[in-house]
Image (cartoon, rainbow, N blue to C red; front, side, top):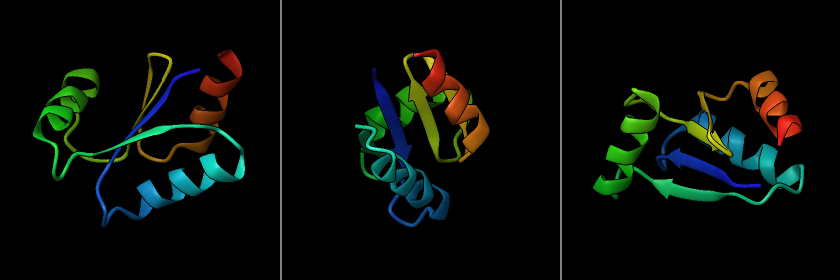
Length: 77
């Protein structure tokens, strides 16, 4: 399973997503879009959004810390 989290250091919801993944034992790759322009552009291409967090779970793109959607995407994969 591939889980990617696009975040910024000051984002409260990004921290909540990271904590949730860690507590659930889910490995994820995090990109700081505040300092990585290429990843920020990638995030916008995937989601159409400039706000964080954006979470990509095997191609299912979730905007914000939407726990029910995250759980659904995790179950599908």
